Image (cartoon, rainbow, N blue to C red):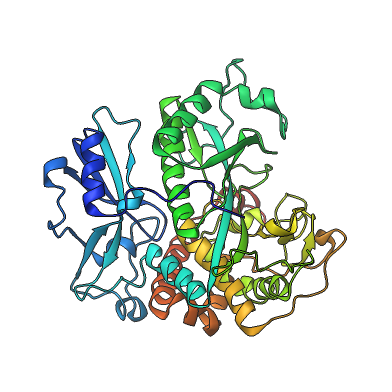
Amino acid sequence: MHSANPPSPVKTFADLEQWLNQHRVTEVECLVPDLTGVARGKILPREKFTEDRGMRLPEAVVAMGVTGNFPDTAPYYNVIQSHDRDMHLMPDPSTVRIVPWASDPTAQVIHDCYDRHGKLVPFAPRSVLRHVCGLYEAQGWGPVVAPELEFYLLARNTDPNTLLRPPIGRSGRAETSRQAYSIDAVNEFDPLFEELYEHCGKMGLNVDTLIHEIGAGQMEINFFHDHPLGLADEVFFFKRTVRETALRHDMYATFMAKPIAGEPGSAMHIHQSILDLATGKNLFSLDNGEPSEAFFHFIGGLQRYIPSAMALAAPYVNSYRRLARHTSAPINIEWGHDNRTVGIRSPISPPSARRVENRVIGADANPYVAMSMTLACGYLGLKHKIQPKAEMKGDAYAAPYALPRSLGEALDLLRRETDLHEVLGESFINVYTEIKECEFEEFMEVISPWEREHLLLHV
């Protein structure tokens, strides 16, 4: 697997200044991906965006839950200072993109978070992925990934108590049946997708294939393979872009893992391979074309550690509704060649492109966290030479569940798995699990329609 595009020519702040001038930018959106994947930050006039500005944000900005609330327990505040300490933000020039929907020329630049001593803030999602990639590079390995991202287009819905429905297409009708891989079903939304591709082109996003997935109004976009950090940035930008584009066409776009009952959930499948940095060869294949020990050790690491890492791949209570039998989502971590019922799939490919597809991750996962998780599991497999189980050659849905069934169970497993703590960082694990525990407790305070319907008068 090789990079689809050459590296960005914008590498230094001087390059960035030149880029902003060439594009006549008048405003700059200074973005920081938070724990959820939400774009936080500040918007500056172009003349205020200078190398020596020293922009800051409170460190809790990257360490809050999806509801914006914070824990009040000690483990969280063992990492996050109670006096609301500042982070120092530094732009990554290679991430600069135009904001194609802005009325005035506007740029968006992703920033990294540093402490006052000039060290990366270890619990910021982008820092975690940088660290994991650095572990690979220290071994002479180059991780390569290619995400496949599913999402739903929905009719506008401003009432959280109303069920979500597919949107109206050009025909004036909404989908009422499943239209997997249907070209005509995609064409129903041609105006939206034409604008989306135009936006992606202006932003230089490496999007490849667009298909209609199984669910009504469910789509999938594939990305070209590249370095994990760059592709996590692209998924971050893409999510923001497709939501904005859908709004402009009077629809919603959602990356919820299971937005509609009875319809398949949405995943973020991540294809992974490892290059030898010295030779450029795929470590998953031998010279004779057969799979290498590294290929099997990587799979062994995924099988050993994914169950304990599920809170990173399935980060919300809703995420676990997706992981059910016969719904195009895995229920275990069996592996197999060209088998879509397993959690870990090896697609058909030539030896030079041999790769491992992690099918467990939900579309709702933070791309930085998800890529860190799957690469961490594979890294531990390579380091410890973990052998996988025998290949699953049949229907993996016939095998037992081997993944946690709820966020609460997943958080307990993650807290106990010290090997993952060492690779991902203790401070990140502490902050992440405390935030997710807070979200889980908030959810448990909500009484669902199912409970009112079936329990109110019968128990």
